[in-house]
Image (tube, rainbow, N blue to C red; front, top):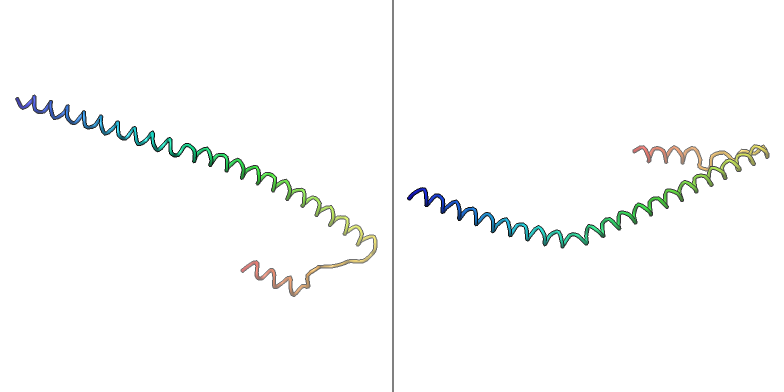
Length: 103
């Protein structure tokens, strides 16, 4: 008789576990459906950010090339004229700036 009671309890536990598993599966599917659009939007945003960053990096590289070219042309003009412009910032201001940047 006790063996039959044990079997009955095991069957009740198994049924309860199956019901709980079904409820968990249902909640999981609801969460997946809820977060699917967020995942798609996140991927689109990431793609947009990467494209913008790439364009920005290209623009920076072009500006650096242009600036380097302008600096070279200016130095050539200085050499050909025999006139040295020297530093744009006074040595004292430059020292103050360096000190601020290091602190």
